[in-house]
Length: 278
Image (cartoon, rainbow, N blue to C red; front, side, top):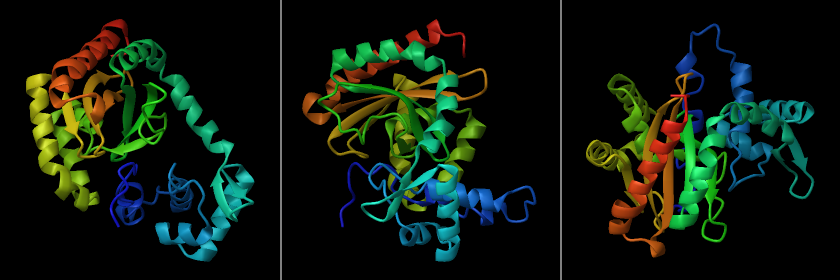
């Protein structure tokens, strides 16, 4: 079966790779808590409803264990039963967990008007992201309503670091030691994606040193071009990255390189100059 071009994360190992083996012997590691969080991370925009059998298959936990966890997560307000399908969906309690993070990122309010201007003037989507394991998660986004499927541009979406322009921008923004550690983690934990995308990621990061931006031309999503730029770190150490994504029918590689990418670089520079956060 061909891969869905709008699939968010290609490898479940990005979510749950050896979650317990990696912490074997760590007496401070709460495996019960980890299992509950692992279940919540199984839900995606493409698969918002999952049953106990599906959750057991994805997590490797036994059906009785899954049943106890889903029962508990429902009682705590993090899952809710879907009466039509007999499965489970995420509940509002999950949103409540994430909101304090978004609210604390005051840079979002500063960047939003600049992102809106770029999105409207270039007919593209513009997003701001931070690292989530081996992915970048969008914490702010601006898009022209008619041009983009929500699967490509919305707050909370996650995209693999190794195969995306915003991910390559994150790699480029890391210090050499941190970068090598991240690349080693990607290689070990997501070997299939590493094999497929390592060369392009290396070229993209190398190009950043010359151009000031990273670019992906259809490798992740065949119908879209994307460019990414790192802004820098917040005072708490969080590395912030931005991207701009445009449909192929609206742009050529040349127009991206000479128009969209420089505009994104300038927008990120404006955000940086206007902020005391980095």
